[in-house]
Amino acid sequence: MKGKGFRIFFLLRLSPIIPFNALNYMAGATAITFKDYTLSLIGLLPGTILYVFVGASAGSSMEHDMHGDEVDSGKSSGHLMTVRITSIVIGVVTGV
Image (tube, rainbow, N blue to C red; front, side, top):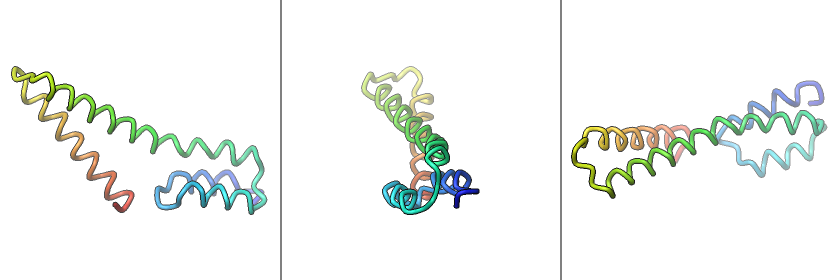
């Protein structure tokens, strides 16, 4: 675990299946170095960026719906479709 700790924990951080508290417990119970553990936190970024994108898309879609922008209804429905597709992908990936 000392030699490949970064690689293992980085890949585990990318997986949405394993809860973070279980990963933290495993890191404490194994011989991973603090440096490798800290650097493996970069693996959290893709999931965080995905959730920020979904939140921004949903907010943008709701803002267009609340202001009643009837002039460009195709753009509003495009935002809504983006939120729906992204939500389905998140649901499939996380198993919800």
